[in-house]
Image (cartoon, rainbow, N blue to C red; front, side, top):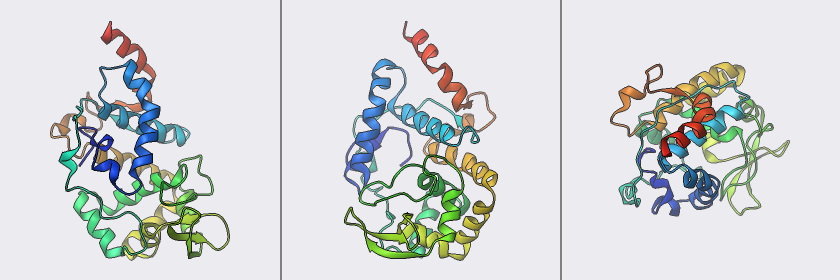
Length: 248
């Protein structure tokens, strides 16, 4: 799939489990920016906004690169056969999860780092419920520490979903989190990140551009350290002036 095309804004992606409200809320936040600065594509804006949100949530301990140039599709049929096979539902096994990771082209370390970013900040997305970290306003390794320290029981959440809840506190988990915790290979990465926040953020900084540029066939010029690869906070701080000048 990848980010090029911004196909997450269209069916079938908007019909996949948990995607509809997530896409609606995100698009509503970004629409005024895209309306004002029409020279930036939706695809670039989504990547830019996601990266800046991660950097700010890490208290600027995370530094990501941004490489623009994505274009927008007018519909989403190119994703017709790309529905995720892993959502976090209780019938999903660790083997299914690892097969899905393999198909993405990401390493196990990449995947666990990206999962940590998704779980660390904010609330669960529908149909799941609750928070996965005791410090959900900050992007750090607290999620991994909570995951290892908690004993979970299967419950029916207030949202109606079957998921897991810590027996000691209000930390929640999905089957994906449980699989990552108890699988030997993935669990070793969880333990590694739980003890070293810098290691987690460093691996996330490597995994993020792989995911964001997965379908960029011009990707070589987007690699970290190249002239087209720009610090996100640096880019976003000058974004308004740059786009205003471009559109005048």
